[in-house]
Length: 178
Image 1 (cartoon, helix red, strand yellow):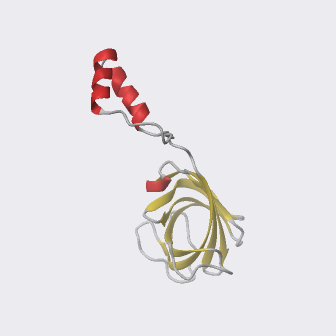
Image 2 (tube, one colour):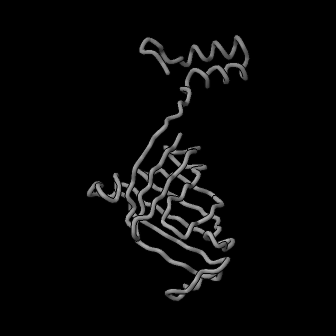
Image 3 (cartoon, rainbow, N blue to C red):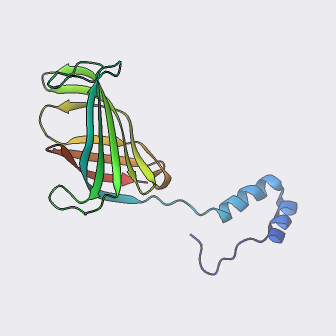
């Protein structure tokens, strides 16, 4: 972080450095002086996701008929628009959107095993869940997804998203470091 009394290095000053210490060292010095150090931020966000679509398709992309039990290889796609808050109290306007795609990899007595990819788009940036293996319980208990990437503001983000199903909708609690 620069102090108010710091002055940027001028072209003449950088040229003198290049002559004095050599081009490679001057480039490193200029980058250190001109590029401020990145500081990680931590945020906790609460979003209510109103489902806009939910589909189950076969590995070939054919929709499963209603009331059909999914099998290994079937894919579940869910999208939603997101409001700051939770299902009981949330903003009137959506400020984000989300997408979750899970491919079933196994079925157990406790639920289904799946590999999931998800995105939450917020203000021109995205939080990403990539290739997350988890067990999807039969109950409405919360699911926890690892954030392992992002774009824009959330580039290199990590953390977790706790998703609690409420009817056809979801409450998200997002704890991210970016």
